[in-house]
Image (cartoon, rainbow, N blue to C red):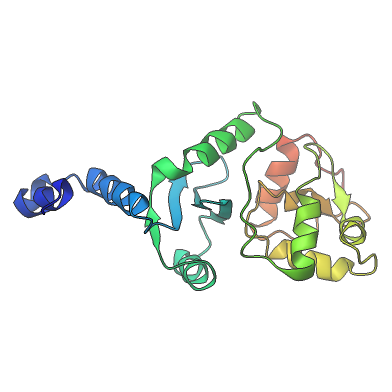
Length: 204
């Protein structure tokens, strides 16, 4: 039996195809058939375009514009599922909450998190980082201690440097013990912007 989507594809001239509508229809049908495990979409932000990836379990990944998409797609396909489609309707809540955050209308995120891309000590570090309140900062050592390894500040820094869910899991709120910015996967300009937005940019 020919579906509406198949009929539209077969009979519409190529110039008249609404690619956005067809992509949305494909994503919708894939979701209904349980063939869509990971949905993604682009989101505009003051620090550049973000691409968010969500699964039925929650927010899986937030990608900055200058991070190669091919590597992220390969990682998600290998470690989570190859059934990935652009499906903006599945990412609407993440978009709304991120827009609220950047517009200073939201101080906390209530998005469920899918932690599938992190394991072991790194998972503990990121779970502790997710609890740092808006406007507060912690040191790498403090986060390591909360994760159960007080002497593992360097390892905590490595875990934060590979945080797959920046902004929502606020690794920008973790600094050196002396107040130095430390590192940030999105670049120090973005880290400064986020800290300034929250009113917690260190003096030095």
